[in-house]
Length: 242
Length: 222
Image 1: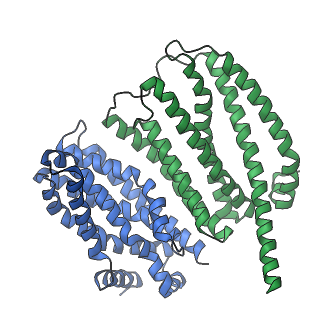
Image 2: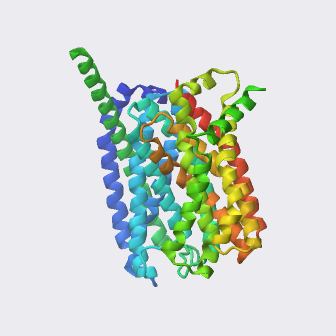
Image 3: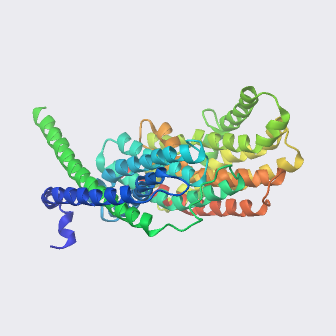
């Protein structure tokens, strides 16, 4: 079966319905494996057990970026091929990306409290993550403002692509901005390189989170297709009555 | 007169006539700056330190004011459809409308900025660099804003959505604008570096803004 066959929404639905239990199962196995490794990982000699927050924090940050990437690819599909499934993919990815970005911010600030003594500093990484969250919320707001789904998709696609151009610039400028205002407690990932005892659980957890994203995204796409069919049926019903 | 020049003249005329937004922006700018000392207290040393940042924030907000009407007003009276059907490329038309918007809201701000800077205790050197950064940076605000204005053209709550969509995208302009303006007053970096990056941001938005806005208009109004 070619990949283009999936572009048919009905075919996508049948494949998704069969794939979702398997994807969910693999995700659960990966999480079980990853969490076991993470719990078995040694504590950091300075940070103690709080270093384990990293196993949730870093994969969340990765998914926050991955979701925008998926949305950008889907945006190209919307604008170039006008494909409804691309609209659905873009719409389904936005709330998931926003949720993981928020999770990244929350775990980060819970980690920051014992390590830096504060929940929030205007550090470059934190600030650009916050701006990413704002952009996600803007896209979601746009989806919720335009009633017609295909018009909303095209408006959101343009915003997504502009955001994809602007996000690296924001990241770079926020880095510059932070070097100007050197804060008291700057978070540094450098220093000692990450040991394999920590790195391997981190990679497994990242894989598990990515599988979780794929599962949630496929399920959200299925729900969105069904939601659109319900909407169409309601519109037909309403026009039949009148 | 070429169609593009005619469009520029028309937009400028609408902006300066009754119901236009040209002087509203300056007035808003002045009001925001006046409110700041009430909130922070009349400490001249403090105001001098944060003056460029306040003026930049006020310019950013004042720029947003007229943006939501930029395409929406033309959409309501039907002239946007005529423009879409005309032979002039839509990207250039959008850029011309952006230039008209900048001339009617950005330029008055820049002219007023030295006077308003005096209220915030900026000296001659600080004023000059502030005007330079605003002159270079406000086109970027306008042309990034064009995208939001085009996306929100047919929406009922367009103005509110516009601010939510556009303001996060202007973070780099704000950072480098304020950095360049502050560098002249006191700062570890030279004025040149952030200023050149600010120029680059403006030039990039001059290209990206009209293309993205024109694409959005085509998608919205077909």
